[in-house]
Length: 452
Image 1: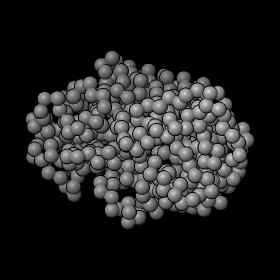
Image 2: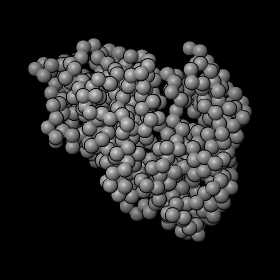
Image 3: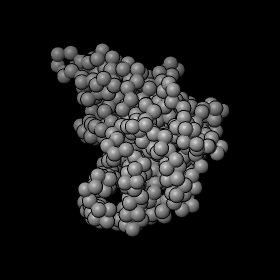
Image 4: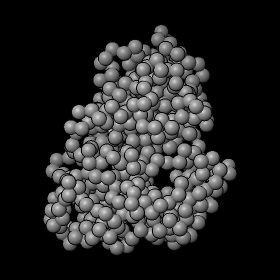
């Protein structure tokens, strides 16, 4: 998901190589013997520990297989949660498998359709409607009740997001929002002081005024604001700007009609593009998070998941805060959420399914304080108010983003809609199309997607 290589992830690579040789078909019994080494393909493992062909990885018949997409700064923290859980001597321990982020949903869908999926999966809440619609995940209500899940421990919006036709299909893990990080050394050099340990910004004018103070102190190859010129992160900045400008939901509640405010979408796109044209962002940045981490940027827009990595970077003196309020009177920002899912299987051992849900709730509740160290905002409200979370540095500076963020539309086609938006916005950032034309094309593609 992110590009930083962590020692903890290398352990997963070693584990994968050790266990190459067989795969579990469907719901294997504890006595089922593994296939021979010669009868199965080798598992392809990358340097960061991600597995290219997880369906061919050996599955310990006595453990629950968990397919994860946490292949970056947050991956090591999930490994710690799993290690801690396994140390409690549960009915079934958990065996993690880290997939390549870009391939996750394709691999997950293919494996589940072939009834060779894992015991536990994870999904963005934005992709959950699609998984439910396609029958790839099961309702967890009965298992959650036996696990002791108290749904009041989660924000109502989060519970609503996992509920379809009165049934709940996931256990919420976190909210991860797009926020802003500031390099304190560069702010000091620019003569910018903080208010309550944050850069005070009330509107777009104040933001650009701060950037204007930063530009003169930059060295060659440095940037006032770090942001790539295509992909998810400029889309997330556009998302925040659009909703701060009073933008309407992208589609109606029924999911049958595009309701995006085209004028606001164009204004938001023009503003984000101005950050390049006005010289505040160095063109051509690819790994903007790493650019900031290496000290080449004063500010960066990126996700909460970067906090853990930034915190462990020697010499990086920074502060984290919510995405700045640039327009209007609200603090809208982009966010998504991770939720645990239970994939559908051809046959199902209910004891194993119960053990799987037991783990997911344990990870969200007992493991929530550990997960918060990655930088994510735990979905579990008692964890958010716990002394362990409050004591973590930086988090209190942006935790309110969980309540001000605008979550993706609850729509089975949102994945395709998001792709269409990003592709068209990219043409604006890269000077390949005028903003009006790009947004008109975006809406046309969104309408076509809804009519499929």
